[in-house]
Structures are given as structure tokens and as C-alpha cells.
Image (cartoon, rainbow, N blue to C red):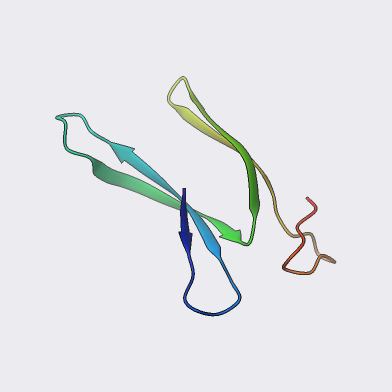
Length: 67
């Protein structure tokens, strides 16, 4: 997981998928998860990545995701 901040109030979380088939890490995919989301857990099983996280609902302020 990477956190990007451009100097404003946002902190954008990105899931970066990296493989190292020959020993050298290579970024193979990125998935933006959102601004100020709260990742609860991350698991990798059977070639699948599962992220459990809280994101902002339609009535939530950006600081306080609830869904």
C-alpha cells in the first residue's frame, strides 16, 4: 500500500502489485483505493488480493469513513 499526499488535505491510498519472478521487483498493477480510506486488512490467497477497508459514505465527511 502506498500513501500519496500532494500537500493538501487529501491522502490517497494506492494498492501497488509487485512481482519479482527473476528476483527484481516489477510493478505490474496499481489500484487506487481512495482518499483517506482506512484499510483494515489485506490478504493474498489463490492469486487474489482482498482488501477490507472503510470508505466515505454519501453523508460522511472526508475525515471519517464509515462504509
